[in-house]
Image (cartoon, rainbow, N blue to C red; front, side, top):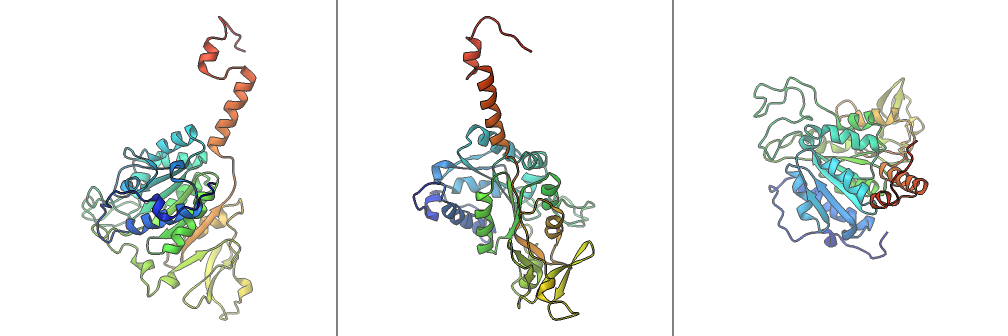
Length: 337
């Protein structure tokens, strides 16, 4: 960790931001600057890598190293960059289309390998850059330019992909929840391994208001729950509602009714290796149960790039070859067993 105290301005580039006025990406960008300053890794030791899409313009607005790469391939390039530069902190930026459609294969394998990268998935449930086609996260029946009569397929739920790939870190926030977004980004940056942060973001042009059922101030407190490790799972405007076990399922209850007390409310454990409850929490959608925001899962597991480095060092020590050149010049023959 650098001893210098950085400010958000240290991570801002001099490039004009070209997103549409009102786009949720503006808030996410500003929070990312603040989160990086809080984490304290120097700009020259940071790389921001993206694919293609509106959100993938983000590296231009960072005073760090960065790549604006090709469609869907950000995770692959971020993986290679991290393995080749293990001392660098790597952030990957992808939208729901870039990251989960053409990039879906790279997404799940980066998570499965547990590469030490921080993956921000900006989810507005639409293709924005190509002007309004439905994406892998669009709801069944969604009407768009490419589905004029409504989609006939079920969407990906990013959390399910992460847990299916045995992910070690998953968090979620909303573009209008600035403090929560900074909290989860900082936690992601300090996690060893692949951290996935889903950021529910509004596209004011092609999918305006898609998250209103949870973001509207009138009922946001009743339809979202901010999870913090070691704390009771409470929510609501009066913080008088909580999550309890109901057999194999979760249930929302009101304290003081039907005999439920604070002692019945579950305590969030983000660090337990079992992902059973984590998946249940991540699947809540703000309808019957509140949408979970905050750090849902944060566990330790072997890190891909660290394992690669250790393997290379071990092979070099056993073989006596430090480089390909030294191997070629070692002699005219050697024994392969």
